[in-house]
Image (cartoon, rainbow, N blue to C red):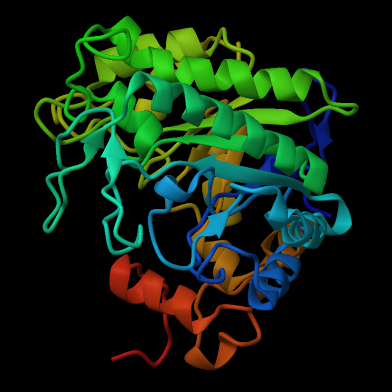
Length: 374
């Protein structure tokens, strides 16, 4: 039996213990029904890929109809989704794996076609710099208050469905990040302008979701995912992010998930700075919250490097698609059997739907290490 540090259990402050430090991060799979319900294809995918990792964070689910960002996206915006979400939580909780539902609102990162004729909304009426982006409508004060409650209700549904927690998606340019970003947030009221005001939306959501968790009859995790930087000007830069993280570390959340393309990525904007961003964040957090690092981790040696840096959890994404038994093989000393490539003939066996494969290879241009590919 292997003695890797990533195989050691971890107990959160609220008492929940996960069996190891390996996390399956949220990965878009675009395989839900058109209106947001869970499909049998998804349930099979979740069941096939669960059981090894300590935590399995779901693909994102929108908290309101206005928050749908792409076709095939899960929804947690209404109680009618509860039966499917309950099956989903059960499928993700194989062999003691903890199931976390990631929840979000796309904000301006959608379009009127996806929203069936409705204009996208955001902090301000500023379009993304992406090609074809539509100009969103600025949310009103009442709409902001309603959306904060939508996050709270989404957390309640996740709890009722049997999930072990929720992850608030404050990363990847979606609405929670849009309120924090000086590019997308040009407001002059209490929700924009100063750093303190741009933090306010996220902190209000955390407060409401924590209320749901605190009233639960069992421990329930609340995580937060953050993207440290933007390349837009004006945009999020590391000094503001580190100040925000200092605030987040004192909030009632259970972990902080750092969204990056590489676990030890350095600054996107300051190329003279060679210190990995995750280590800057680790220093800022100073042990107040456990951290999840993600990005281009494939081998047990890669994962152990994250552990050696003192990071609490390591997230493994694309490699878990190729090898659902990665943890089991690493734990049993059968590393030679870990699959690092995938054949197109394997996709059905792995529960990878055509929609997911198209998203990975066409939309994301992800290197899936396909054998026999031209």
